[in-house]
Length: 320
Image 1: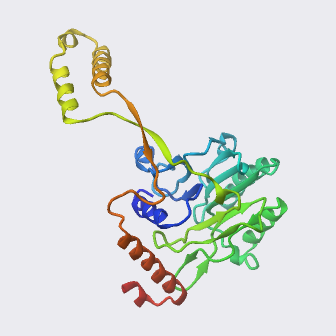
Image 2: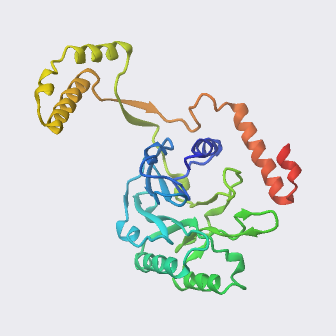
């Protein structure tokens, strides 16, 4: 995610649909860099591995109310990485949504223990739930791989339906269905399937319900900012230069001196550059100046070529 965030944001802006929730696995995020992983128009909650690989995230449209389901997240383990939340909206009711990642070749029993504990809780709820993720379990092999068959039978026992039925990851000689969205309330009027993008070696998957496709997004949002004109900056410098700091040198305790400095500096900073609010208009497309009409056409052309490559496996198409 840290490497491909700009690509992801640009790709989302090229689509004609604004997704309510975006689930991402293998974020590679850490507690240090997570504050940088911003997608405009969305709030975000993450569960980081804080080591190489792994990690899951949910981006939620900032017009929606939600809360984290800590009772479900408590069942995460090294082989069952997950983050769950619950949203409530008058247009489509209550939904529980989760992002899940099972590392390849991880302990099957450990994953099953965590996953089943979550299913036991949410299956008792009358709410619709959607669990999206990279399971590294190829459902195309359910007839010839006993653990996969057992996993699918377990979903059926909980009346849970996989929404994705086509391969999501393509190798040079094989294709696998290892990414999916599971739900307890499939809807014949809804849409689900694959998107075409080469951001990852896994194709993005999607689910659009009849109700969520009609969600109204706000035309304006309120943001906080500090005025930082050259005049304000010079005023801040002058205020700091004219402040008497001599008592800090006379303070014997370093912690006390630090606290005094921070409190005094913060008071001056807030006085000169107070936090202010303003409304900004939301655009259906990217407001980044470098995302021109020509670039959008080129991105769509690139994705069309990538689609042809996935069908033909002709590597010459990658060089066009």
